[in-house]
Image (cartoon, rainbow, N blue to C red; front, side):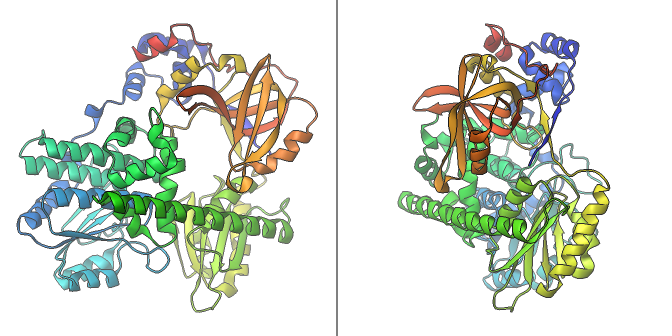
Amino acid sequence: MPKNWIFRGHDPGGFLRLAEQAGIDPVISQLLCGRGITDPVQARSFLDARFVDLRDPVLLPGIERACERILKAVQDREPIAIYGDYDADGMTATAIMISCLELLGADVTYFVPNRLEDSYGLSAESIERLAQRGRRLIISVDCGISAIAEAERCKALGVDLIITDHHLCGEPLPNAVSIVHPNLPNSNYPFHGLCGAGVAFKVAWRLCQLASGSQRVIDTHREFLLSAMGLAAIGTVADVVPLLDENRILVRNALPLIQKLAPIGLKAVLKRTGLDKKSSLSAEDLAFTVIPRLNAAGRLGQAQLGVEMLTTRDPQRAEMLAEYLERLNSDRESLERSITLAASKQAREQFDLACEPALVLHSPGWHLGVIGIVASRLADKFQRPVVIISSDPTGQKHATGSGRSAGVVDLHQAFHSCRDFLIGCGGHAAAAGLRIEEKRIPEFRAAFCDFVRNELGESDPVSRLHVDAEATFGQLSLQTLELIESLAPFGAANPRPILVASDVELHEPAKRFGNGEKHLNARFRQHGTILRAVAFSQADWMEPINSHRGNFDLAFRPVINEFQGFKKVELHLVDWRAAKQSPPSPASITKAPPNAATSASS
């Protein structure tokens, strides 16, 4: 499906001025200006991302009261339970709190819900079980901010509840001993983008300060916090929160430390995936290699094993868990692939894709753990909102759905507008979930499509691809790409730059590769320079590319591919089209001078 390529605004005088004032290379200043960073002080702060610029944890709302209560429980050997979540953010947050409290000598255990059997977040039933086992203090991580009834149940049972969370606050707030949250009403914490693991890291940091009796923690606590920072970085990337401000600082500073200071279970994962051999890790290494293995455990109802892998001190157990998570991830990929194929077939055979503004696809027995990923894949493929619904083949349970917006509408608002047909719904603008009676799916489909159609009006839902600049293959040297890497870590709110190369010819035919042959690679040539291009999860492009007669315009993310110590430039293909006979965009990437690397790092 074609995308509309939108080139970012270009002010040569502005980015050259920024380059001079901030002491950075024009390649970097051009890309920073495209991201709205035009102030030299802001630019240097962004590029330096110094650890010392992380805000003191004492500033986080609710943290002092929470830490005082936790330390009292530690000193009194009061039984504590950490109540986590089943995604990678929740698992890493749980692991941070467990490891911290064990370091401090606490009597602590943890509970993580089973995605396939338990409800999301705190549940009264789980709280009652923990109380029956003698737990007198429950600390939630990455959940709990909407647990009004559950907080009251804690009080009735004589259990103190501390909530640490980052999700949207509602009214009223739960009646807990303390709520640690970066965006509590009437608070003034300056950065609201922390994930659950980021909040947990701040709590652990403050606990270590208080236990050390100083802002400067003792050596054993410092070593733990450096390791925990790696877990917080994984949770930050996994939860797709903006990689700006404290999140950028956290991830940027943690990445060089993970290989050295990771828990032994995580080191086993790095070894199995070959990431231990890389000279340095990137946020993309976490996003596409480490995090899917953690999330596979959660999606297939084994989140507790993900937490155990991150906290075990037994090397043999660590190896076993890393191997098991590898198998779970393989199972998850197989499930995802088969359901994606079935849902794609249903979309093409049962609906007129030229007319439908959105897709609601349904089948009994589609695995609940992967329907969200499938919805995401198809929303990107068909460039419109997609809801994937799985019903219980036995008919004993209500159907469950997961939707992705493709950036077209606010899904939370859309589901709320269709609430008359639903049992329940929740989520965010880009991703949301629902529960529904199977017989009401057709009514919901009609109402949902009407909502999307009304939101779009006469506009075409073709997605937009924002391009940072035009570039020739000859400009894409290792030196230039190393400059671009200074903008890393890349992710939400700070994506890897997308460049366009025009009038490129196919040098070697496109071929499928990878598990299930779902990826594609090809070689392209421009003015004598030949580069390899990889398109992930785009095997369907092979035939159209190979049969195209003429040259191409390529939209891609430039990357440095490192293999066995050898580095080379590679293109991660985002989109392509038949070459247009038009002059290059005025937003052409600036050629890096010979001393560019030196000036960028000064």
